[in-house]
Every structure is written in structure tokens, then in C-alpha cells.
Length: 297
Image (cartoon, rainbow, N blue to C red; front, top):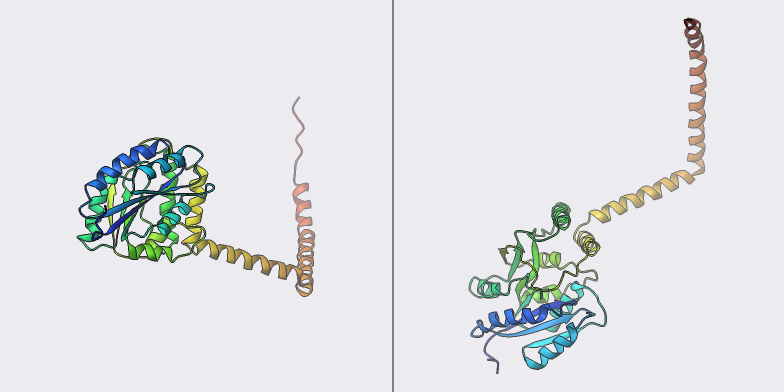
């Protein structure tokens, strides 16, 4: 039985086609959480994002075998952002963590993250990758370009290499849930709400099992959501183009300005004709000065 005097640690784990990774993840995270049992009670809330493999059936079985495991199942694939939001809304822990099931977010950092909040007084402990070893070069290139671009045009700083993996107090989670964004970009939302945050860096880790579900175009679309959501530059550009287009159409359709434009065109044609008359004598002189030399035999 859980100790009611201890705070609750809720861990939200989004899943999409992760039948191979879930058993490995549960083995790792359970070991870590067992070592924290004197400090916290815990629950694992998996969010099945419309998986097409055996993810849901595996989660059902684990939830029967382990009282710490719960799950949410989507009717179709809505995306990781929706899965994280559903998980955050479903938990009521005093501390809430979000982490991936593929073990690229190291579970063994959790005790250090918890100590930073309880012992050092931070409101949130976030993680970032300092290397991208193992990633395709083109993906790493575009990721670096994205972080440089968004930090130049946005007032909200997005930390390069930031992961969704973080541990938050209830106060931080409530602030995040108060933002009713439709196209969510959590990396920006986490930073926008503020609070005292400690960053922990680590090297990129390979997936424990399976393959990434992010395609290049999926990441590109996600980046566009982030730029639109956390910068006014796209809005300023579209506003300028709209004003320019409206102004051009007004000027082009005005009868008065149309007659002025016609007069200007006629004046230009008249000036060209006069210049031609002036240049003609000189052209004749030049032509008369040309000596024709017959080809040699």
C-alpha cells in the first residue's frame, strides 16, 4: 500500500507503435522508482497515441499486473503534443515528469531531478542533449538551423537541444494547462510560463528498441508550428504583404490615378520619339563614315 504521507510522482509517457520498447522501459523505470520509494509514491500514465501494433494490448496487461501503471488510449493518432497534453490533464501528482518510452530520456536522472526541486528549490528541472550522435546529418543540420532561427525572431528563448523530458511541480503543470493552445509547441510553452528551471545536460542516447516515428516532414511541420506560435515575424510579414496588395489594387483601379498613369506613359513615349529625332543625324553620319573593305581574293 502507498504511504499517504509521501508526495505523488506522476510520470507521463506518450507512446506510438512502441510494443518493443515498453517492456524494456518498464524494467528500467521501475528499478529507478524503487530506489525512490522512501521519498515518493509514483504512478506511470502511458498515453497510447492510436498505435497500430500491440502497444495497447501490452499496456492493458501491464496495468493489470502493476497497480502503478495506468493508460489512456486515443481513437487515432493525434500526435505527441496531444498525447502529452492528455497525460498532463489526467494526472494529479505533486510532481509530474514527461518522458519518452524509447529510453533516449534516461530514467536514472530522475533522482537527481527530484533532488534539484526538493533540495535546491527549483520549480522545474529540464534536460537537453549536448550531442546528436547517431542522428542523420540532414536532421541535425535542420535542427540547428531551427534553433538559431527561432531564437533570433522569438522573444521566448528555446534552449538548443531541449528535450520534453522534465520534472515539474504541480504549480508549473497547472500553468501549462491554463494555456488552451490548439497547435501546441510544448518546448515553447514550457519556457513561456517561466518559473525557476535547472537544466541537466547529457549525451544523445540510442533508442532501446524500435525506430523513430518522426519523419522529416513531420519535424518540419512541427518547427513551423513553433515559429508561428512563438514569433510575431510571420504575422508581420503577412500583414505587410496584405497591405501592399490592397494598396496596389486600390491604386490600379482608381480612375483618376489611371488617367495620371496614362499621361505619364504618353509623356515617356513623346520623350523617346524626340530623342530618336535628335539621334538620327548622328546615326547617319556614323553610317557614312563606315568604309566597306571587299574580301581579298
